[in-house]
Image (cartoon, rainbow, N blue to C red):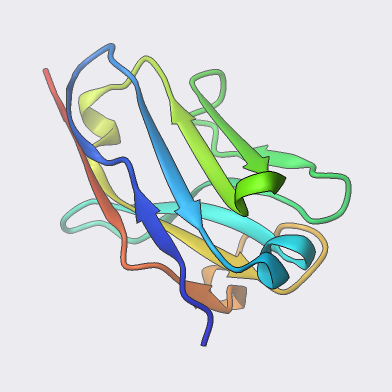
Length: 124
């Protein structure tokens, strides 16, 4: 089973920034699409951003457009989520997930492997 290792979460004030990392094997990194999701207490898990294997097309949830950026680092087999202008409503546990498909999908159940998550807390 593929292992995904997330890091970079923490406590930050509103307006601040964090960069999340998701490290994985070179095999997965080379051929799969990667998504970031988040889940706040009492809420369903929701998609935040995704970067496709095909052409590295990126997709974002409306709530994070213009503030978050997803990117890939080929040398490190790592996908990043740069989060700027953070808001208290961004507080959640963030997960990365692998999709064995060339383009991103909206349905969480399509994703094949999940990391254990990293907590992001934004204070007001």
